[in-house]
Every structure is written in structure tokens, then in C-alpha cells.
Length: 60
Image 1: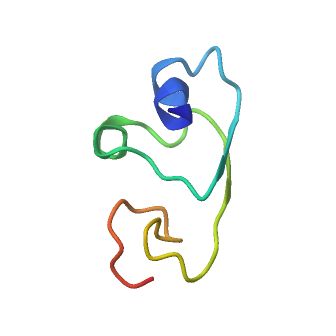
Image 2: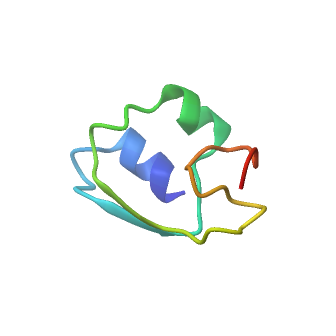
């Protein structure tokens, strides 16, 4: 939800934070990553949410 809010309302949300979360497929395809700064906290061996920020667990 936080990524969607940041993508849809970049003038309202000046930054977002995410702990082990990733974008939805829609946001991944349609959001410009340069509008809102993101603090993202992840772990190395999470097989559900990839550390590289992608939406598929390729090489976790």
C-alpha cells in the first residue's frame, strides 16, 4: 500500500519506508522510482520478498 500511495500521490508523501515489502506488479510496471525516496529494509535469505526489490524470487 505504501508504494501505491507514493506512486499515486508523490506531492503528498515526501518519503516512504518498507520493512520486507515490495511493490505490487502494477506499481512495478507503472511507477517512476525517482519521485519519492524509499527506505527499504530487507534480509538476505527471504524467499518470499527478494532483496533486490523485484517481485519474483529469482536468486535470493
